[in-house]
Structures are given as structure tokens and as C-alpha cells.
Length: 363
Image 1 (cartoon, rainbow, N blue to C red):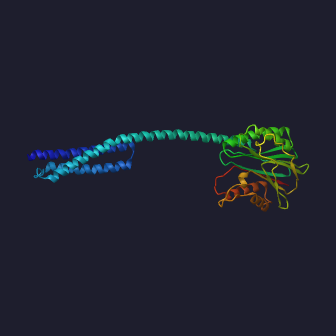
Image 2 (image 1 turned 45 degrees about the vertical axis):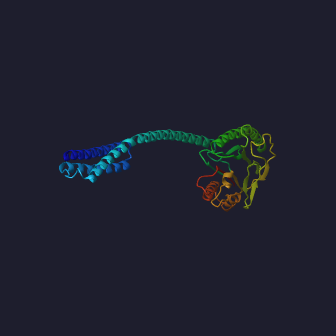
Image 3 (image 1 turned 120 degrees about the horizontal axis):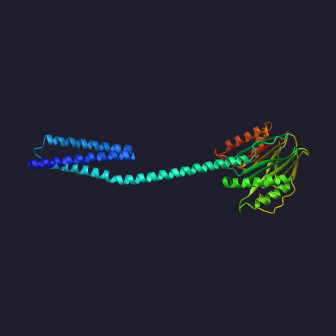
């Protein structure tokens, strides 16, 4: 009778050890497949310790069978509990594998979708870089070389592409057309409209030399392309060195001239932005005498509407003060100074809007 109980006791411990070692092997296998290293190493370690404990108990029982096993209820409870624990431990690890398979399938699907998304993002980035290069080639690469005029410019988009536009058209050795325009908004849409507006301006300026017909025709052409609510602000300035005269018209866009004595003259708007009233007839241009020592500053609103950390805007007055204090600098130095001051003033290191400025010093 005792031998049968001892055999049953030994079998129970043997099965417990077997299930425990099987659980350890399964845990190590899952770790190798799914790479949940730390979690499965901890589980495997716990399983190994339990297996060693059960195994040593099993060996000890074989070598030294307990004499009172028939009547030792506590020992039987411990043995059966150990067997049940080993079975449950093995069953838990065995039944959790399908969950890991589902998680692994989901992870692989997510990785695949991320790879597709990354390729699309990279493709979009390459397209935007191409659009940036194409648009940059449409803007002047250098200022025109005209005697008595020191010209420099700044163009910095808020995103890959810009809705700002500036251009120079040299009429003859003594006359220059300058335009600065700003499509509402920034990004790819305004950039496309900017490209269209450049084509119109260039085409019109080839046949027209005067400010008023250029702006009126430009407005008519743009009005056919813009959607309701879209518009372009523009300023056209004609500098005539022969007549020593400045003529200008502003379509929702103004400019500044710092006089030799430091006073600032604001070039007022002469009509609505382009694209709002298709048949609007702009008036005759305003004119000012061209004087040595004048500094012309033509900016889009991205500069003077830059918001600082205190919530205020950079403002027209700050531009006037900055140029006046540094009037002895070259046009290029003034442009670089303006760029630095706007960047230092801005609440965010990233431009809030497209930034464009043209500065012309009259010798």
C-alpha cells in the first residue's frame, strides 16, 4: 500500500517537473520568436527555479521515500498543488501564444503601413523640394546692376514654397520696374497662384512700361484665375533715373521710403488687392522726386506682422527706426540686419508667414 502511494507521489512530482520544464522551453521559444526579451527572460527564470525546486524534490523522493506518505495530508496537498501549479503555468504560456501571434501580426501590419507612409512622406518631401527649387528659379537670383542704385532682397518662405513674389524689370539703362506681391496665405496653393501671377506680370511688362496700365491689366488677368476670397496684394514702383522720379501704385500693398533727412514716407495703397474687383481701373500713379540718399523698403506683411513673445507685431515703425539708425549700411547689410532683427523678435523660430523684402539705396 505504501509503495503504491509512494509511486503516486513520485509520479505527481515527476509530472509537475515535466510540465514545469515544458513551460520553460515554451517560454524560451516564445522569447526567441517574438523578442519580448526581458519579460520572457523573467518568466523563464521563474520557471527554471520552480523546475529546479520540483526536480530536486522529485529526486529526493526517489532516493529517500517518505515513510509516512500515506498519512501525511500536508505533503499530499503540497505535491498536488505543485502539480496543479505546473500544469496551469504550462497552460498559461501555451494559451498565450495565439495572443502573441495576433500582436505580432498587428505589429507587422503596422510596420508595413508605416513603411508605406514613410515612402509617401519621402515622396511628398521630394516633390516639395522640387517645387521649392522650381519656384526659387522663378525669382530673381541677383539684383539688377544699375548705376546709382544699390539693390538687395530677402525671400524666405514659411514652408517649402512661398506665396510672396518680387521681381525687377529693367526698361532701359535709366528705368527700372520693381514689384512686390503677396498671395493671401502660404504654402503650395498660394505658391501656384504666385507662379501664375509672375507669368502675367512678366508678359504685361514686356508690352507696357507704365505703372497704371500694368497694374490694371494684371488685376484683370488675375481675377479670372482666383477663387472667391483669394487675392493678391501688390506694389509696383517705377524708378526713373533720367527724370529723377519715382512712380508707384499699390494694390492693397504699401511701401516705405526713408528720406535723406531720416523722415519716412509711406507709399499709400491706391486700390484694392488684385482679384477682388475684376474691372477696377487704377488711378494715375503717385510720384515722388528721386533723391540721393533715399532708401526704399518694400516688404510683404510677413515682416511687419511678425508676432513677438509679448504678442505685439514687429510693425512698420520698427522697420523705419531700424533702417534710419543704420542708413550708412549697404542694401545687402540692411536686408541681412532686417532678417536678423525679425528672427530675433519672433516668438517662434519658424516663420509665421512668408518673408520678402526689397531694399534699394539711391546713390
